[in-house]
Image 1 (cartoon, rainbow, N blue to C red):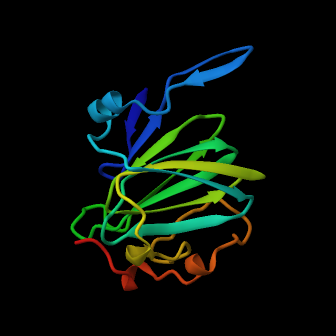
Image 2: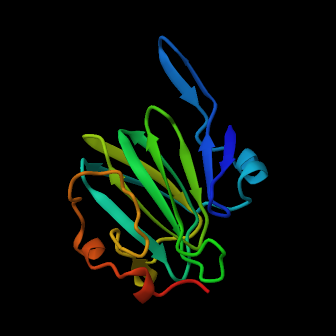
Amino acid sequence: MKVFDTPLPGVKLIEPAVYGDARGFFYESYNERAFAQQVADVRFVQDNHSRSRHGVLRGLHYQIKQPQGKLVRVAVGEVLDVAVDIRRSSPAFGKWVAYRLSAENHRQLWIPPGFAHGFVVLSEVAEFLYKTTDYYAPEHERCIRWDDPDLAIDWQIDFTPQLSAKDAAGLRLSEAELFP
């Protein structure tokens, strides 16, 4: 696998080695030893799988206690995946990165604890898979508005996304409970 640094400290773009022929393809989506050596020495405790249709935007989510590191990828379709540094002490505080993850490019994104995360579905449907370093704790979950003008995230869309009630009620970064 190839691992690339991003402009956000700790966030890594991962391109696995993919072996394909006329029958299809094979790739190792996760290897604990290689991940620890090249990305982060962490323990994953939960795997999640979501399916969403075109135009659905999920995020920007994080847990203020029991923060989760996330290794994310797409098994079907394509998304624009976004990570935002919400650590007040970070030199990259309030900065974001966005990458297209798809079933075709097999890219993965590692988002350590201390970041908000979200994605928008660009294909007809997308199946999104992610491993987390801590368990889901709804009482600690927080949400930052996807369209916060202070963040000015370029979601690369020309439509109004579909949001859950929780995501529609997200706070601006300046109002949110954040990491030190």
